[in-house]
Image 1: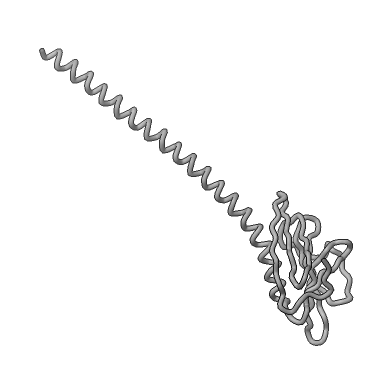
Image 2: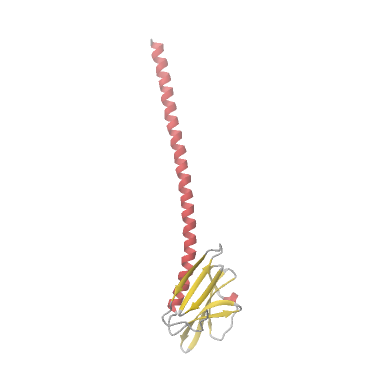
Length: 169
């Protein structure tokens, strides 16, 4: 009888140990799965956030430049070396200065110079990566379209209160 009780206890303790090890293994496996899923969700969220940042930042930058220069018809669209540019005119102490906003060599660029002083497109300060920047002027509004390196495009329509000089459609 003593032998039978002992065998039953040994089988029971082995079975208990196997159940505990199986539960621990399942816990480790499920924890790893949840961790991998969490990393995937984080990476996807980070990628989408970066894409939205570029879209919003480029359009927001251009819109803020337009709003900042919205005085006395200080906004024009011109071409510089065959590249379309948004030009903001400002007067400091009787001298007119121009801020050129354009896309060149895969970058949104800004160039500040005295009016009449010609500079090369490559002289502009790089703001952010951008494939293209285009403007369409119609009836007192300006439609700004930005295209990113991946080909995604977004547009924004603004209506400057002071109007647009030298506008073309």
